[in-house]
Amino acid sequence: MPKSQLYFRDGKLIAESGNVRVYEMDGKKYLEKGQGHTLWAHDDEINEYMDQLKDFPKGDCLEIGLGLGVASRYLLSFYSVKHLTTVEIDNNVIEVQKKVNKIEDKNHLVLNANGLLYAYQTKSMFDFIFLDFYTHIDDETLPGITDMVNACKRILKPSGRLMGWIDPATSGEHYNFFTRILEEVV
Image (tube, rainbow, N blue to C red; front, side):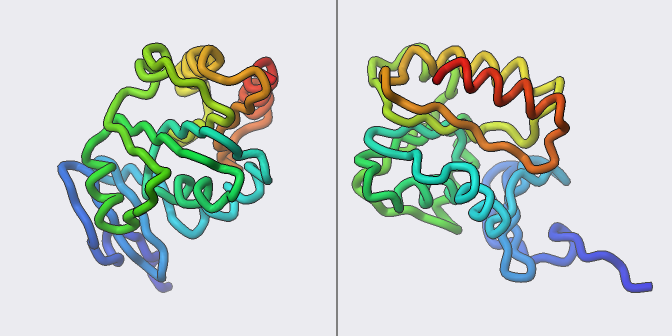
C-alpha cells in the first residue's frame, strides 16, 4: 500500500520566517503556522475566492488576513478596486508571503497589525471588506469572527459590502450562523 504524501514530509521547504513555513508539493504551496498547522493551499483557495466573492470587490477595500497573498492578488485583479489595505497580525506571515508570492502594486498596502484593533482605531472607510483571518468556522472561532464583523461595521461605507471566506467543510449550523451575522451588515 503506497503511503499518503504529506506536504511537510514530502514537499520542499521554500520559505521560512519564525514559526511560519511555506512548502511546495505537486505545484501547490502550503503555508504552515506552527508545526502541522496548515493554513492555506494556494491553488485550492483561488477557486473558492472566485466562487464566493463573485464581482463584489470595488473601491477602497480592506482585507483582514494575508496568508500567501492569494486573496490580495485576486482582489487587486478587479478593475473596480482602487486600493487594497491588507492587515496581518503575524509579521512572519508577511515575510514568507513576500518571498513566495510578492505583490508589487502601488494600490496595495500591507500593515502588520491586529485586525480587530485596526478596525476600531482607523478613521478610514471602506467600500468592501473581506475577512480571511481564520482557518475554519466553528464554535471556537465564531466569537472572534463575530467581534471582527461588529468592528468592521463601523468602517464600512453605507453602500459597502462585508464578506468572509467560507471553508467548504463548514457545518450547516456554523455556516448558517456565519452567513446570518454577515447578512445583518447588509
